[in-house]
Length: 342
Image (tube, rainbow, N blue to C red):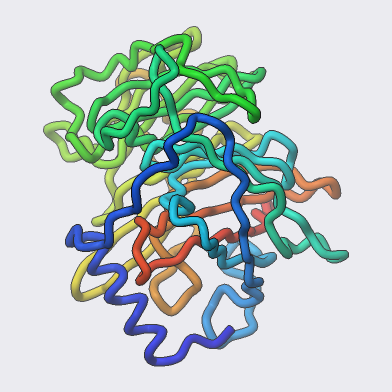
């Protein structure tokens, strides 16, 4: 798809809307805690670099993507997701306080071609009542393991665990100690990354959380290993003006982070950075190389969600989703890459 000059302008002003806080507010929430089916239209994206046919971007090879729209007004604000069936069924959270579920469908060449069986459910409190206050349900990070969804929330900072039941998601059954002093977490810069380390790593599958932009006195980003044999607070080196929006561990133990930046001069950007696994430890400043950086000359938006998974042919896959902030100027995107390891 070739983006017109008008398309560039719309994307630029969408970025301004995102960071200036003028994106349109979402409509009133669904007034039931039941799961609601949502009709999704998905337009394939065949080129990541707008107007160019190149597929290789450093170690990442673009496979394909989708631009998703829906007549359902509560669809959008997708902030984190994880596959529960590799490359197919997924679960996610929206920062407006909704769970979402669905399935990525594929063509004969394994490229994403559509979304099926998409459903949403509003989050509820311990009494099963709908939670309408945005500051209580600003869900930003998610990981899944053994039928449990662990969610990171900002504003009212917490890390909570839920039993996964796509037909009826209930209130959390547990809240975890996130170790970082609460006063160090900025109101709208909390836990964007929630991810389990590899079972055979030094953290033995322990849970790691990384904030978006809660900085220590040295300007590094607060993070913590909150479960596992080596619990403790560490930081991630802040590289340039990028903030962290999600992350997941790679099979070799490194941590892949999704990052976002905006400036009036440079516009909206996204970046993928590979953090060395051995630098993820108590008291350390974790760091690593940039694998990919993309600006508005590429098919990006407000990229917020990331997952890493293995395709049935053994390819290591990286999937990304964007948060449209319920703005008509922004888009809900799904993008998919192969991460080549050699």
